Length: 250
Image (cartoon, rainbow, N blue to C red):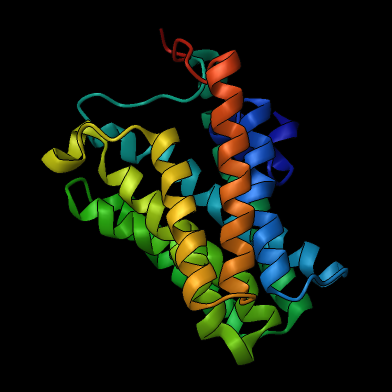
């Protein structure tokens, strides 16, 4: 289980299991945030990414081993034998990530970034303790925090613009998708198809940015998102979705 002491190992094993998921990890988070942050090539950016994702993994661990116990139909993301081994070393795996977050905060010396991480921690605590339609809101807060932290570290002077761009391009459509899950029973979203929705949303956002804010940060981010979504939708139509497979517990 020493592999799960390494940052990204647990998150990728449970939330990014396919090549497409891992490619998307970079395309819809790392690269656009890096672009909005001014495309820094520095150890500080890497440290910020590792710290933020380590915090996310702590939230994932608590969700997968504690929150699911409150659910009638829990979604176990790993086979039983792996779950048992991780549960055995849960404290060590979590402590390793807490240590990484603390060391990164000391190294980065940014009060705003630290505040953003605290915001993510509170959002995760709420998300993991609530099981109702309020989870749509807590999911929005989690996504917002994910796109907030690194701009808070690198472009604090234009944090408002950076957050608006990233919320419109990524946080809002992801929240709409999340709200369409059957467990929330949002009737007007029950027929939403994720992949076509993503492509259409990205197209409308790119067109709106082209009309109202040409050559703006929003335009380039929206265009990036649109091109990627069209390519993904085309690939899925041609080759099918690799993520449609039996869950580990089946």
